Image (tube, one colour):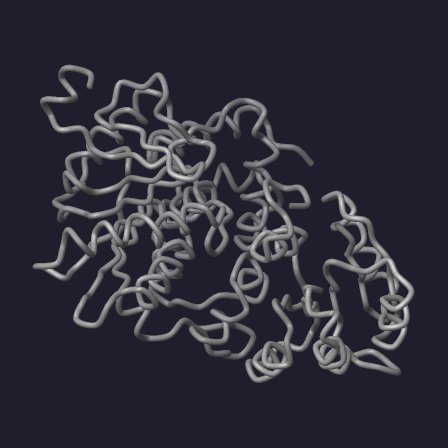
Length: 277
Length: 127
């Protein structure tokens, strides 16, 4: 069984149009692997038949887009950015936000929420009393946002990078799943957001995690997202990309500030951006 | 870096052996806790033990308590890899001295990520 070129082209164009995520030639296997379970669930004989179906079934089309835009994720992914979050960013912000005593963090492209809840754990464990924090978790997939809001994870997901001490502290067993503590769930708000489209009105954030998602966009879309994100980050705020992502050779208003092998980005002021400082 | 895999299932030992040797660890195996203690006594001394809970002769929990009662074995990292998945069981293993806990079934990535968390792997190779 293999995916026909026409089916692949249709799906690639659909996903690109709706989310700006690119499936290049050679990714047929990935499209097939992600759509096959949906084809079976929908009672179609194969993925080609399923692709015909999504051309006239908007609900199925939405499911297909969701399936093709989710990424594998783990708790405290890559470790080092979370270390920098705790050791560098939080102390700086605790000093700078002493009056407001409130922090706002954006987990952009949050997938199933491991990043947002990892941050919630660190904040709960680190913030002095009298401080509060909120985390906005956004994603293009409504299915993923429902999962984040539910805060329930299967056993295989829980094994992915979750320290055992935090598992027992922050989760309770519910059947075969693990459910996150209500106080952490209360810190995380979900919202549907397509990074490639103009942002809806959003507050100013102290820290933005925009990790492992820009790789799916073309260069001009990446630059546009980075420019628009700058407008949402406090002048002394922080942006973190994935460990394999960089702004090198990109004309974007961010200054690279490597900390312990982690590429931390700081916003350039409009004047500094104009002079290329 | 040396890993000792302690599991009464030969198939599970093979799966774990493949994961840790792919990372660059040397590896030995034991079918229960008593065999594992005997192996540690004669060497090679493991940097980490991956330990099943339910095994004949000596179970994984007893093995952990025995290793933790020996002062000169304090530097060995202990990670449970088991089907025991109750909240209370995990608490019990950690209280006895296990450093980490993986619940079966797991993906190879899960083992690599836990070894990274424990500081035994860095950038995909033994630290």
